[in-house]
Image 1 (cartoon, rainbow, N blue to C red):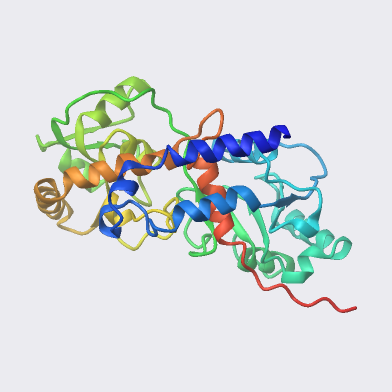
Image 2: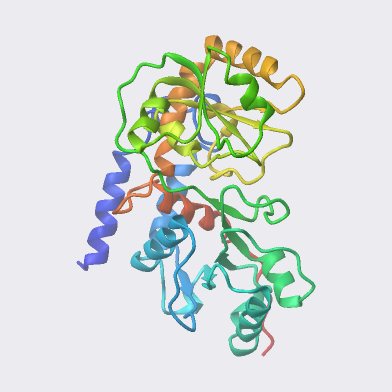
Length: 349
């Protein structure tokens, strides 16, 4: 038996014993962090067994600008998913530097179109790429097809207008906190804000004894203590720092996302049932009053269950040195697997 076969067998055995206890004990959707709790396990197994990706060779080696991009690219290259036979590939990966100008990206796609047959078969619909800030709308045909057809993997949060829901994927940030703490939640709400940016909400909450508001803690251990000692963690979407949302889940601090519109680029939005693991509060003139009302109700009615489901879901945000079932890398691969069904145009003989 080959080394790869042994690795796959061990992985599948590990997966059978590593399913979330919430998923195993609560088959009903409302008691699971997953959108499709009955199908995620068999779909994941099929992904791990059969998924194949063809990686185009870049013209030169280059670094990515964000740690999550670098980790994903490295994990992908070291995994068993890549194939040297493009005819066996479900998807095609187009690697290019994060700071590559749009004109150069257009030239890259043009070369793929003219030199190889795979792009033209679906106009790029079975291709994907990494771009932390996302690709904007351009008039060049090559960029239009890349933007509208190919799967974009960008960083969370993605700038407005550069993320297409149900097609694109966002990368979860790399955690910065150490191991879990055993703190008892003693604060209703915690928020870490950049004080350079003016925020009415921050100014109003800073004098409220139920909330702990501070700028970035001096070290990761302090941040871990804050997360573990709070029932809810506040994040202002589009204007605040939302990079710690996955860490909040891991420490049992239910995320409270303050936003003035629906969020379309939440990590793993087609895997996790975000409404069951986070609270969403509309930003308005009476935001503080509404926030305290919602949290007061959630604290009594749903907090413990949301905290439990959030901890179960936090495994998907972990970037492990050696990839583990359902960690950040494999969940990203699972999302790509769900997007593998594309219309393949019939070739002309």
